[in-house]
Image 1 (tube, helix red, strand yellow):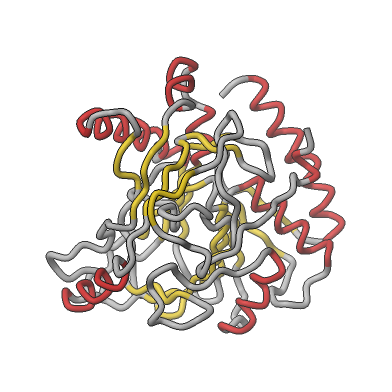
Image 2: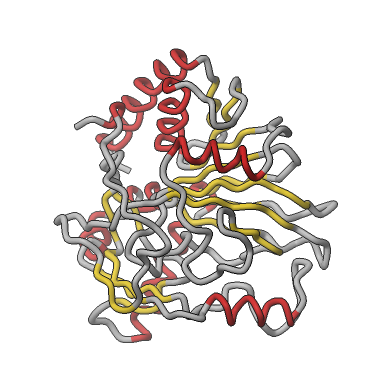
Length: 327
């Protein structure tokens, strides 16, 4: 991270604090590079304009924000709150059997990924609320893809800024060979069949520019399957190198779930991993994703659809730069 990066982050955090004060909310950092807890607000569809802007800003600054004590939330009020932050997408491009507003997450997606990167219009954010929790385990960990980019040495930055990766939904992120996380093999096979019922492929830049902050981040995760112009072995080696930098412990934030929690993450600046350390206990959470933009690289070139039309899943947001990140 350069001195300029540090100064820019400090300036943004100072400007954000004024918004938090105006909205009478408290934002407490839980990690240097990612994660914060937000207090002083009862979530729902009736928040003030000042509260909404403060929450949007806290998310952009901290990448992941956690709320506790929101025991009043149900599916309806979670959806109403999400709608204040953006336009909710359909639950999933292919998984349509679990409702028409929220996606029910069963078990844990224990592989590093950014949500739904196989379409062109990647969701800008996800909101997750626990419904059934195991007696132990089942935490979720996020990693800052912005911090990972900023920590790259200059020669590696120059390389990745020219790279493009193909992302596909033909990936079994829950595993098929044995039961885990309270989900048996039959359930996994049924889920995978629905997950891959329509094929999507999109060519994305490995370095995308965040439309609200201007920050650059690494766009990878387990839906990425090849780098344009490189051999499979070269992809594997370079992918592992970059993923190791993304998931460096100093770039991560771990949340141990309790009832009444709600966590929001910036899907344009993070990857996440559901930890399947709870045996065959049941773990269920409800997720809402918000419509995002089509990623652009450092030269302003947009992602390109290879296969699949995601217009039924999500609109394309026309984002604006947040005031605290004004150029």
